[in-house]
Image 1: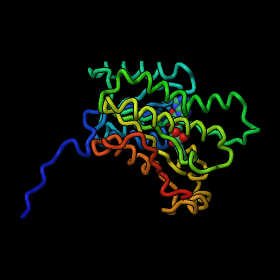
Image 2: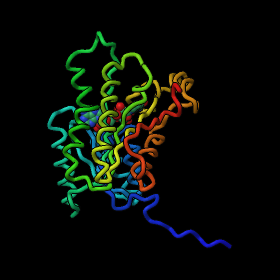
Image 3: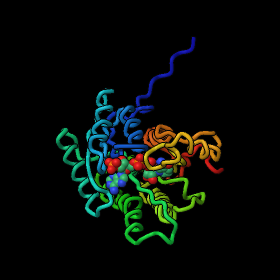
Image 4: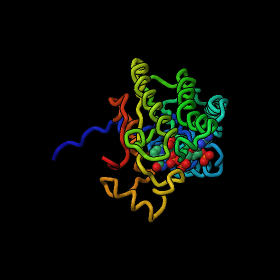
Length: 263
Ligand SMILES: NC(=O)c1ccc[n+]([C@@H]2O[C@H](COP(=O)([O-])OP(=O)(O)OC[C@H]3O[C@@H](n4cnc5c(N)ncnc54)[C@H](OP(=O)(O)O)[C@@H]3O)[C@@H](O)[C@H]2O)c1
């Protein structure tokens, strides 16, 4: 009989890690918060408007034996980053924890389906703000608090590698986020912080009406090698892997999370 392998508690566990997930009240962010919470992380569940839904997510983590709390901030507003980090620090202090954290997931995002001729300057600014400028400054302002060996995961989109009509602002915003990912991976490597981008394809959430619709999703599925649209949990497990000890040697990467959409 072979001897049992010794258990290594670093594997498969985020116990003791503190994670901030933006846009965690719904969709992909919700699934990421649950995935990290299930693995033992203390999760800051950020929301924009949907406080009740964020509270449900935090409750689900706590009911499963984990730890979580909610934080509200409008990430389309310039002061959103400050509001979010002030809230995070206060919540950690309340729990007797240091103001430091380990995992930052920039997930909150907004789409805009418009042809270039239809795009107004205000639309352009909002999409760039939520999808690129806010993650940029959230990372910048988080760095003094993000522990060495930490993780940054930026949620981009496979719409940066295949042309979809009416994504003339959204796709460039996400492409900027991917470029930022690459630069920061080099800059933060000395601190052992990994920085990666995850690129979902069509995923069934409020943001993607086609993927969320039983009929339209079947048409979309025809362009996906694995033959179906994504579910939020498909994306969340990839993020949890990147956040884990097992993901420690991956940095500066764009990881397609589309089930092979438009290969
Ligand atoms: N679903 C897809 O097919 C797909 C494909 C590629 C990439 N993505 C990317 O995946 C990420 C998550 O998308 P999703 O499909 O899960 O979207 P979703 O279901 O619409 O959820 C968006 C989340 O972001 C938050 N949010 C949006 N704008 C905000 C703002 N101005 N301030 C604060 N919070 C804000 C929302 O908070 P509240 O509801 O509390 O306001 C919500 O929690 C996004 O970055 C998106 O671009 C999605």
